[in-house]
Amino acid sequence: MNNFDLKVVDGQSGFSLLELMAVVLIVAIIAIISMPLLSHQIASREIETIARRFIAHAHFARQQALHLGASVIITPHADGPWERGWVVKSGCIAKQMRFQCPEKAWFSQGEIKPIYFKGGGRQFMDPHSGKRGILFNAAGAAKTGQGGFVANRLILGHLNDAGLERQLILGSGGRWRICDPTRDAKRCH
Image (tube, rainbow, N blue to C red):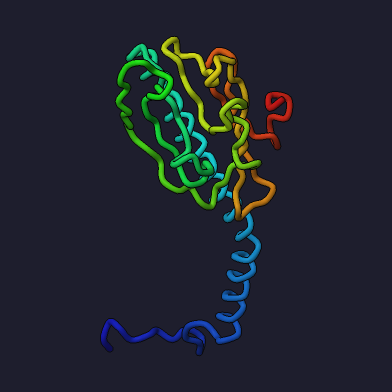
């Protein structure tokens, strides 16, 4: 007898078809039950990643403004919606300046689907010019084009999980925080 022969114990070898089908059925039921939870976890990680990336880019913009002593802005690509991505660039507007102001872009974020900004991300819109973005002045303060202070929030949603949202809140001191309204209802308001 070679080593690959099945040993027969009490007249049975292996599993019956019925036993295999029962195991497959149990695995299928467990998979069906766990899919929504897994989908929610994946969506939650995606939204957290984009929220942290946006805040990191906003921190970079503020730090560049402080370092350079000049305005730096984080703004959507081509003045479109935030979902198309954003760019961190020098914030001086050549038309308003009497001297040449070369625009410099440090880096940008591409499209962020399936994440989207609820309300189109219009919370950080200059009321005077209608342009979206956060302009950090040379002192590192978030200001509008007319000099007013910006303290607001962006609300992120996920296309695959309607109840999932994260709020990116910019405080008056320039500090950002991420808030999950399902867990931190008091901190989000």
